[in-house]
Image (cartoon, rainbow, N blue to C red):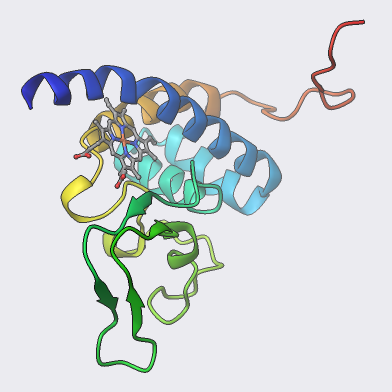
Length: 169
Ligand code: HEM
């Protein structure tokens, strides 16, 4: 178990933080109302607020739609409610945390950028038993990678056409 966790830490770091940071930057460049508070937090060296702003940015473009699961035994989701749904053992599921984070029955003003959200409204790092073991590392690394960039004056997209990948002739 210790080996598995250590290797998980080594390999888990590269794709997740890279995609998450790219997604955050894309959203910041797209939405000025996200960029302004993020830049203010960076200039104030308020790391805690900066991470809350960046992770709220990521809620709008998470690294995946949610985890895939295989149902181990027959189970009823929301048992006793009108939405009760029976899942048979062996069923493959996409548990869409992305959708859950925009469910206005549980999340206050989900479409608004609110860095002051309570933690339970974000499922970016999963939930329960498999909650991301690297979440605190991710927060530290991403916050400190972004900070110098966000402090730059005139931060914006480069001029010119959007880069596209074309197969070579
Ligand atoms: C912003 C960056 C990251 C995001 C959004 C993220 C997201 C997630 C999510 C959603 C899960 C749960 C997967 C599931 O339930 O099946 C998870 C698990 C995990 N993450 Fe991350 N992660 C990030 C960064 C990292 C980093 C930096 C590391 C390692 C240093 C890491 C290592 C792991 C490992 C080992 C697990 C499996 C935990 C378990 O199954 O008990 N992640 N991550």
